Length: 428
Image (cartoon, rainbow, N blue to C red; front, side):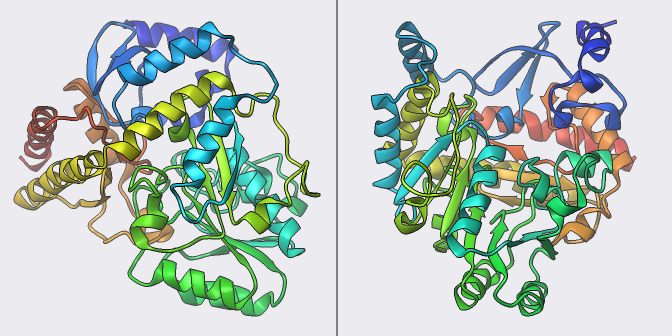
């Protein structure tokens, strides 16, 4: 028995399901998760000291690769001054100023501790600003585990086959309206049926929690227009896409200006961080300046701010990083597409920049319903094959692959060789 299995046997006795986040569980692929003891560059090392090429990248924030030396150095220096103060620090001001002076649609920003907290706070702020209650979200978009957003959510809920969540009172979701991703008509109908009542539309501008699903041409622009016409705010959930698809995220890439935006761990170099920001007139409603309350003892943690500041500087001051990530994405995901065609497999590849996903369905996935046509048993076989051959993927059909600057051409070639071996094994 390997050490990961031994650790899982211990974990299930004291931790629900043996994991502290459902997306880490591997029950749907019929095995114990790999327990990771370390990581460097493009690799993670498990509890048995086996090394894998990693395409999880801590679910996105390790865009420079694991354990980047410049970021690590700043973390060590910050730790020497203390781990947490529960008080204001210069580091908070530095990173807020850095973001707000470089991203046009973020005029003010508030640091929090997770993507879930960022989205929850942005929703409250949108309601406080508009004095309306209803929120439009999209089936298959995941915005964290706050009560009002666990409606037709993606990510771990799709993997586990859970339609919502026990423990969420009906009243908490009564004002959450669910639309169809890439379908503007479904949004128009909700606005018409709830005239003057919708506070905001929240969307993953590139859906990355039901696999990777790209917005069709005109979809995001149409959302912007509908929100403006109906006096509602447009919230981009960029917990995954922020600072990854471009420094200014999907908003920059697609040239759409949201009213509010949420970010996740990437702004903390992988540390537990989130943030929400946007137009000054909206953000000025947040306490202590305004009546919308939100607080957090660990928000703006000095160690996390040091890590995030260094990572953001490296990204902003080296724009060739994004062109390298684009090229890596074309090489890996384009190579996978070619192999799928060559071996005539019933799969599709969806990708943009450094984000990608292999769907085990022949359908072109445009929304939640089409994503659910995927063959999850076939995915489980794929996952096990890749893991056995040194490739570490998210253990779910409905999660994304993430590339980092550390994924060199050599690493990508190794991955494509393993993927071709997989294709041969199932097409024989």
